[in-house]
Amino acid sequence: MPHAVTVRHNFETGHRLPHLPGKCQSLHGHSWWTDVTVEAPDLSHAGMVVEFGPFKKQLRRWIDEHLDHGLMLGPDDPLLPVLLQYGMKVHQVPGWPTVENVAALLARVAGDALFDLVRAPGARVTHVRVSETHVNAATWTAQ
Image 1: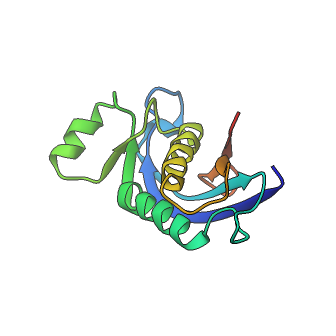
Image 2: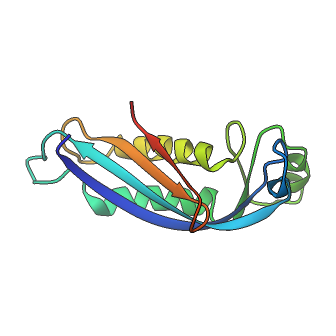
Image 3: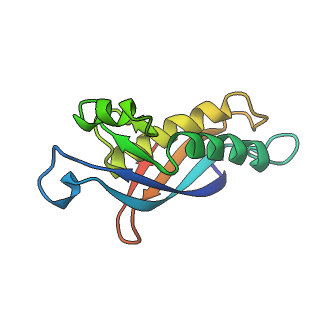
């Protein structure tokens, strides 16, 4: 696909990976960054892949409402019911909140955001990169 646009956003979120050995079993947080790329074979009649404003607004709103200054936990995490009982902002990530699963989650969210927006024919999310630190990142790529 010859045309692409990328939207970037950051969020502060905690998570834990109790199913893995090591320090990530403990509840901890990161300054996460995501880059979401939408591609299209041709530009729309207005000369764009997707209008940045509405796409950024929907993607950022979802991230801010569900992830920013909250926690991401797996659905089987024993902390989940306790934290929900106390009204904590918790988002259940399918599987566990690994950076790989967070990239896949944001790919789905971004794809849903595109659904109602003015966009070029065939525009779709093709690439999501999520960084949980300056040195650790994962990429989701459409097949």
